[in-house]
Image (cartoon, rainbow, N blue to C red; front, side, top):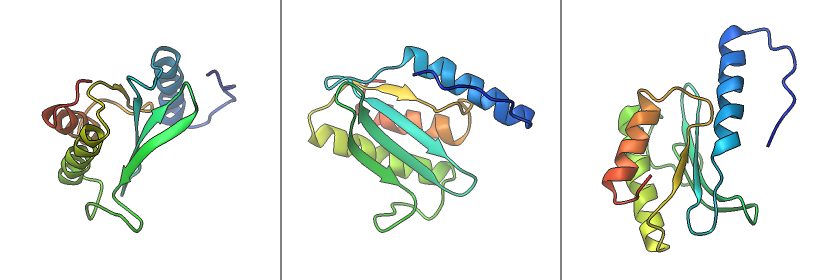
Length: 124
């Protein structure tokens, strides 16, 4: 997956786009080992489990919408989302996955999410 990188004026957004493309070159999800893609905004957190071989989303969990699990996308919300995601993956007999942090740095909310998924029994 290689997207064209046009001139991005914001330096931080340009770095994030570069990291995102670098990660997606290496991380590919399969039916046995799907890709966990974490999308974070300033207020919310949205996580999808994706099978790239068949281009299907297996399941998704978020902190907003009808089935919101937490009030916000802070570290406590990320822990709740991670444990619910691990329970849902265990219900679908998925024990291994690859983690796609979607260009975000591995600190704070993203790290709390990955840690809670690991504590739920999913090997990342």
